[in-house]
View 1 (cartoon, rainbow, N blue to C red):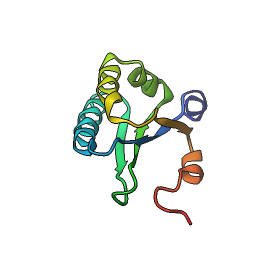
View 2 (view 1 turned 180 degrees about the vertical axis):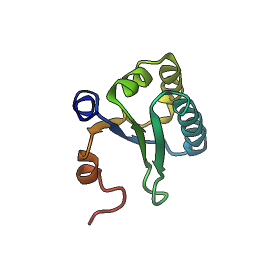
View 3 (view 1 turned 135 degrees about the vertical axis):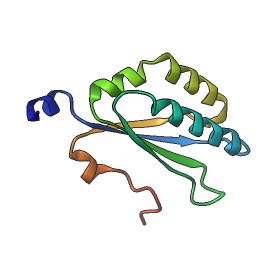
View 4 (view 1 turned 90 degrees about the horizontal axis):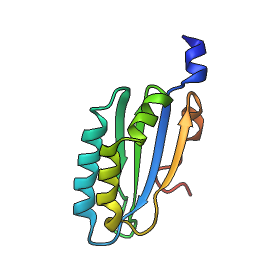
Length: 117
């Protein structure tokens, strides 16, 4: 089992998205839809959503967890995901920032989700 983890490890994906002012309600619907769809894929372990901490902050952080990198790849290459992302294009200010973190690295490198000063 350890050998499999080295070749096909658990993964966490951290996505940061800045949402256009006035598009928050539509973006919340997008989050609900894409997370519900992700849950139907094998290996999906859960999603956490960190919403903006104030009206001046328009950045959402969405964290997807998968049991294996191979299952994440299936999700990333799916038509379902592509369709959901196309719906969100008009809601964003800039392209999403995406980090893929494997294994125990997640315990040490998850970004600060609130003001870190």
